[in-house]
Length: 204
Image 1 (spheres, rainbow, N blue to C red):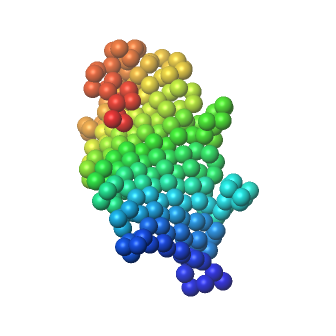
Image 2: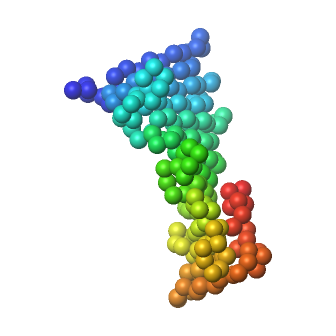
Image 3: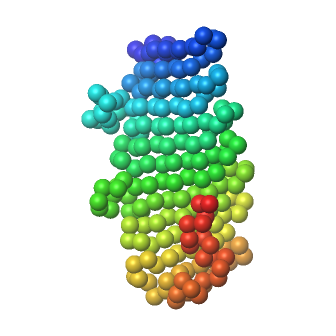
């Protein structure tokens, strides 16, 4: 019945000073977690979902992901986490002082359009872990950017990458009583404060 705990075994190794060096946990669902430590502080964690001879399980395993790799700073605070999903897509999250600062979700690169209708999604967060900006680049090269203030949408920017619209850039300002829509025929006509978000500088 899986026992009283969610895991089957936990194996822990220590150094001569009695400090933990490694821990390997095998869970009831077949997933495994490997943790490494230095001077008793965790430095990295690697999780695998039901690997069979080093390869993903034919049924995708117990979880929607194949692997999760997490690394930590010298104080043991999380610095980054990368996840590979069963469909081949990935997600990377960067942290500052233990708080989420940036994420990059990428569709699988299979030579075609991938699993989703977008290529990648970038998001940035403020010091309070609130979403600041999110940019989606679609397979047809269109781009969509949302800028947030106090967790509310403040601005939307659409870039017409495939020339399917009568405009090249559309801006929708939500900060007033009603939404204000402005279109631009050329990217060069867009105000500098908008161009900032239409470039990858939002991930800096």
